[in-house]
Length: 164
Image (cartoon, rainbow, N blue to C red; front, top):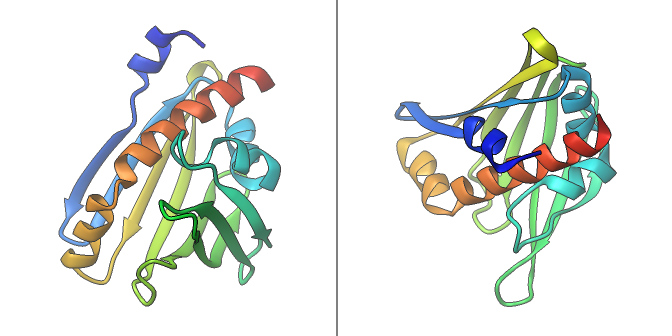
């Protein structure tokens, strides 16, 4: 994929309310491929997170009521964990799950991923994270998640290009 295509398909991160973060990006790949990249633990580990913090999928029971756990090395060499439960799984359109970070336990968001099929074999990804409070939402924004999401999406672009 060229840099021009990546620039046209930048990740948009907005705050539509005091308790929400909305992430949107168009991928130059069919919805089934984008879904597979989210649903296959090996593929998810290839693209999830920023370039300088590899993420490993250590658990993934992709069904309503199933759980997941991802790990990444922290700045002091400690293991950071991201985990939760799948609330809704409707391939290849919707994945909704709770999300919690080991660094701030007890602060749980609900993340809803929707994949929309577009003309020309493209896919629009929309993810809305809903938090219990504005403080929790703002804490997520201050954590560096914007960099991690944008870089992860760039890696996902490259993965999708290889798999087409």
